[in-house]
Amino acid sequence: MDIFKFGGASVRDANGVKNLASIIRGYKTGELLVVISAMGKITNQLEELSKGYLQGSSETHKIFEEIKAFHFEIIEQLFGDKGSQVYNDVANTFVEIEWLIEDEPDNDPDYIYDQIVSIGEIVSTKIVTAYLNLIGVKALWADARNYIQTDNTYREGKIDWAKTQQKIQNGLTPLLKDNIIVTQGFIGGTTENYTTTLGREGSDYSAAIFASCLNADAVTIWKDVPGVLNADPKWFDETEKIPQLSYHDAIELTYYGATVIHPKTIKPLQNKGIPLFVRSFIEPQGTGTAITKDNNPLPVPSFIFKINQALISIFPKDYSFIIEENLSNIFELFHRHKIKINTMLNSAISFSVSVDDHSKKIEKLITDLSTEFTVKYNKGLELVTIRYYNQSTIDRVTVDKDILLEVKSRYTCQMVMKNKA
Ligand code: ASP
Ligand code: MG
Image (tube, rainbow, N blue to C red):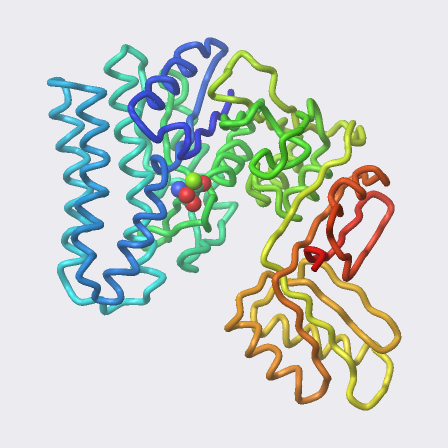
C-alpha cells in the first residue's frame, strides 16, 4: 500500500484540487491513503483568527468571513449546482468555530489555537473527498483525530505510538481494501477526544506516521518542486535535483533548515525502511527524488541558508577556561530559555553560538548569562550549511560576505557570515 501527501500549495484553488484528483485517478497500483494539508495559506489565516480571538480584536469576524468565503468559492467552482451536500458539511464544520469564538476565551491559548487552526485540514479533506466521489473515484473521508493519538501538549502533540498503531491498524486496514482513504495531515486527538496539532508544517510527519503504522510500501510527497534540490530555488537560480539521497543525508539537510520535508518525517520511515519519494504535482510524470537506505553520498554539494541569525559569544568573566562546568551552565540557560542552537564553536576562553534572532527571548537569555559571563551579541547574520562541501561551493556562497565563524566536520561545513560593509 502507498501513502500520498499533498501540501497546501497543491490544493490552493479549484484547479489544484482537480490536478490532485487526476494524480490519484492515475494511481492504479493498489491500496492508497492520501494525507492532505489545509488549502493554500489557510493555516496562516486561521492562526490570525485564533490570535484575534484571544486578543479580543475587532478583526476576528472579518478574518473568519474571509476564510469561509475562500472555501465556498472553491466549492462553487468545483461542484457548481451539485455542491449542496459538501457545502452543508463544510458550513457545519465552520459552525463549531463560530460557537467557540462567540464566547470570551477562558481556556489555555494553545488549546484554543489547536481547536481553531485544525479546521483548515478538516475542511480541505472534506472538499477533496467529495470531489473525488463526484468524478467517480471511490474515496472515504477519515478523521485523523480518531487515529493519531497524542498527549495533550497543544500545538505540539506528542505521538502515543502504541495506541496510534493499534487504532490505525484496526480502524483503517479493513477500509483500505475497497476505498481510497483521504485524511488530514497536521492534526491528532487526545484520549479525551480533544484536537491537537503536531507543529506547523507537520503534515509530512502525519504521512510518515500513517506509513509506519500501516507498513506502507512507500510514501510520496507531492510538491511544487521537481524533487529535493541542492539549494532553495527561492534564493538561487542554478539548482540541481538530487535523484537519490540516504535517510541520513535527508535528516541532516532538513535538520539544518532545508524546508522541502519536515525534519520529523524521516526517522519513522528509516526505522521501517520505507522509501520516501518527493515528486512534482506540476509535472507528475517526473521521477523526483527517492530517499532510501542506500548510502550514496550526494552527487553535488547541497547548501541551506538560515537568515536572521544572531551570534552570541560568551566569555568567562574570571578568565577561567571554557570547561565542562561553564558549558553545562551555559547549556542549561539555553535550554531554560528554549533557544535552539544552530551551530557552535568553543575555544579556550570563549564559546560562540548562532541562533535564530528572536530578540525578546535572546535579551532575557543574555541578562541571565551576564551574571557569570561577558556576552557579545551580533545581529543580522546568515548561517549557511553545506553538506558535502567543496571549495568552489564555499566560494559561491561567500561572495561579498565576511565570515565570522566557521565549523567544519568531514561532510558538513557551516559558516556564520554577514554582508561586507
Ligand atoms: N497546514 C499546516 C501548516 O500549514 C500543516 C502543513 O501544511 O503541513 O502548517
Ligand atoms: Mg502548509
